[in-house]
Length: 220
Ligand SMILES: *Cc1c(COP(=O)(O)O)cnc(C)c1O
Image 1 (tube, rainbow, N blue to C red):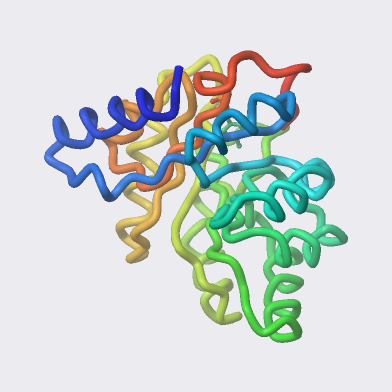
Image 2: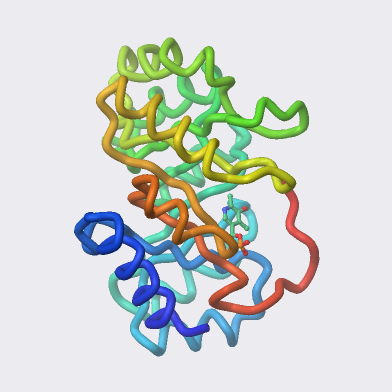
């Protein structure tokens, strides 16, 4: 599906929910996609992309940035502290802040570099053992911790368990964000972005619906 078609569907879902379509940002998730598919979307004029691995992002985006103006890059996958500097220098937003050690590292680097991408705290709404993210019960405290470090926390992010109805997870994320005064909600992927919009998503992360199936199975 083209980016235009996805944007139309987002706009319709927003309007149906009584929301301003302009309040939802589509992040085109280009991880593990052949470069020509990414280039085709750049040629259509789209500029907001998501990658889940710093290494992979570093391999393709400097070149694209040299050739196309105005690219915004969102890091949406788990972030190791030893990749934090690279992520901060490259990204406009990081969606996977999920532990104090990482928060401390980001805060120190923000001081050093003098700027910091917009940050989202990842919440493990399904309390899945293998999944990254702060547990729902620990999220309020972690948000406080991040604010104490002067980090620019824009909102919360979640990836609902694959086997579950995502609505409950979207609703939970929205509730935690609201009681903490956070406006950003990064939720919704190819299979459920319209539903996420109806629950208040401000950032939807859509990969395969735009680019087609990935080269190899996703991790994380
Ligand atoms: C891969 C990925 C997506 C996009 O998934 P699709 O199902 O291809 O739309 C969204 N969010 C995260 C964190 C991802 O890793």
